[in-house]
Image 1 (cartoon, each protein chain N blue to C red):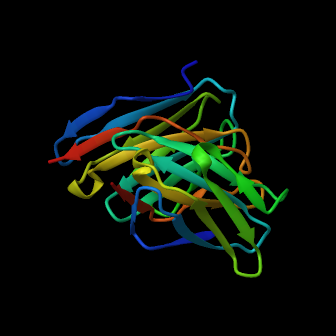
Image 2: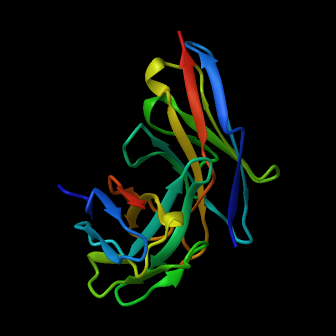
Amino acid sequence: AQSVTQLGSHVSVSEGALVLLRCNYSSSVPPYLFWYVQYPNQGLQLLLKYTSAATLVKGINGFEAEFKKSETSFHLTKPSAHMSDAAEYFCAVSGQAGTALIFGKGTTLSVSS
Amino acid sequence: NAGVTQTPKFRVLKTGQSMTLLCAQDMNHEYMYWYRQDPGMGLRLIHYSVGEGTTAKGEVPDGYNVSRLKKQNFLLGLESAAPSQTSVYFCASSRTGATEAFFGQGTRLTVV
């Protein structure tokens, strides 16, 4: 079975500062890992995904994440926050064929000027 | 290009009433999912399907039923609505379990 833990339900940064959103996973099989973003009153859209190729994954809007098997982590980073990055971010995991996509509880990112 | 379409977008039900939420996808995806989103709880999986004619329970299936009679449609039913089912419901689909899931815009359901 797979599970995801997102550390910190709310992260606040200043515009231009580093963004770090934490995600740890549990999986009995090699995982597929995803980060999604949700803007207010909208559905979720994919930021990036890890599917066992490169451990450093680059996504849209300048975000990237690094898969660290030894730490069972898949933290999301962005070097310089922009006001438009304010949203809720979800980490998700899936495993072997026939299993579902499981989400963490989400982290709300606030960006101040 | 419609993607994933949920019907209806908003609904108010009285306790004990029944309703069906419809999800339709036009991407020929095998996997479809129903989630509910509640403040502080993230997205919790209700039921999912890995192909036409198949369904499986997620982590919060009680009070809901689903059907996947056609590959493009995934229906979520509430037989006797309860206030605890007040939530935003999202449908999603993906080609496989390892590929991107595409989400609908959500259905905001209030049970009074």
